[in-house]
Length: 299
Image (cartoon, rainbow, N blue to C red):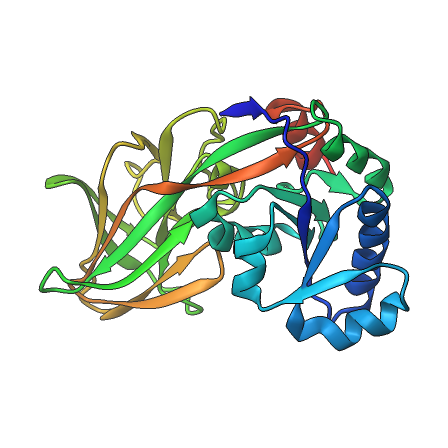
């Protein structure tokens, strides 16, 4: 979903890995540009000393604890790769704080700008110079054998069930609500949002879904069956993925490539559409298919 927004951003949180010099230096360049445009800049207080050394009085910063930063910011500017944006998305989703990604990674599929395009930041303060894309998220619950929730997380990209670092075949049962769908004898299973359909799911042979489509993409990883194929479910579905392995008693649930949790034999991962969403700032008049073509053909 896209919508125009005429409200300029005042307080901007600047998120990156300040322990890496190139990223911290890029953040200072972006900070100077945003300061010239009249923004109030917020940086995590844990990075105070490093930022003040690099800044040398050029830009005025406010320093807040990370939770306070996410609560106060009108906009989050995230410098890094897709992993950095995914991490910020989970934190920002409760307040639907918009995120603008500036690519410092490799593909940077979710990022809007490159460092060479900082002049486009003017569009943030021009009223009609940007719009917001609303991306759906996953509500992921791990239920123990008694049906009690022992782990819960939000995901923007995907939930992945595998055997972890050891590449062994596992047995997984997929249901929609109380209705059995199929069983997989495979290296694992990916349940992805449309946003995540261009990530790990795509590498495993899953379909690409336009973010405007309300769906889940379910993709087996290296299935050992000719009949195992990727499936599409409406995002009104409640998917249940159960560990039915007899040889491997413990599998792993990974959310957005960052959050990990053990999945024991007989336990179930329940996946549904979250009430929370991620709002991505778009400045360039690019569109999903042009962005897809440009990023996927990048070397």
